[in-house]
Amino acid sequence: MQSVDMNTNTPMGIQGVVFDWAGTIVDFGSLAPMGAFVELFKAHGVPLSVAQARVPMGLPKLDHIRELGRMPQVAQAWQAQHGRAFSDADAHSLLLSFEPMSAAAALAHSDFIPGFMDSLAWLQGKGTRVATTTGYTRTIMRPLIAKAHALGFAPDLVVCCDDVERSRPDPMGMHACMAAMDLTGRARCVLKVDDTAPGLAEGLNAGCWTVGVAASGNALGWSLAQWKAASFDERLLGASQARARLLEAGAHEVINTVAELPEVIARLQARMEAGQTP
Image (tube, rainbow, N blue to C red; front, side, top):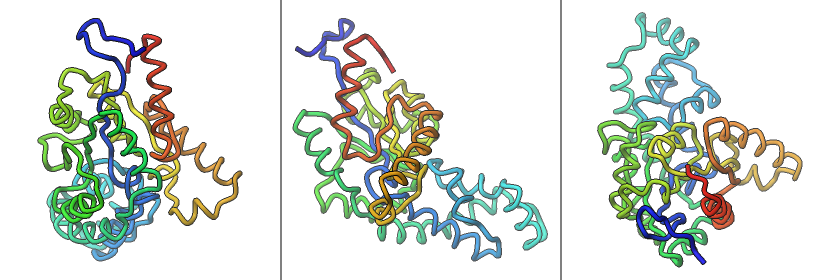
């Protein structure tokens, strides 16, 4: 028997899920943004490693570029190459170059993560509403959204980072998603699924449950081929390190991939029935 929220006289439980995109439902390993960032700075004479590019992941892309430009090694290389400090105007200029590069990379890494469509069908079978947010801009997302729609994924809303006045970690995008799912004012019945700290913070700041994604996300950064080729012990170690980072970021639960979503929602349901709130 399903518990009832005495404040609203409606069933308790997860009634809406808001997914992130890269590293969560597409692009195993969140690889697309990394190559684009490395190439972007390389084109301006500044070396950038994939490890450096990953550090601000989850932020809106303009903020991500700003954070990269503030890294001491990057800032020093920019000063040496351009004879001046990295500026906000530089960040805006780089974003204009980054968007077409990133759109192409995102489309090239747009396969759904194994198990996502099964989890989506499970959610739809329970009548659970689904929406998404992303640190990508609308320009980057257009071809990816079109492909996802063609493959059968049409969420109630896609909130891109430039669709709202304040994006991650601000909850404005989550509020838009909750409105689209008819769940305004019912944050404790909404789950945010994300592979980055800013994306989890977006859910936490909205008052929602959060689930971190360890194996397919930015925290680990392995391709699907690398994950499949790894030994059991290698997977266990890699995922445990990613799990620790996501728990430190505030995730209520952590899973390897979205294929495990039904199981984690069952755990959250048990926590809710025990009286816990996000």
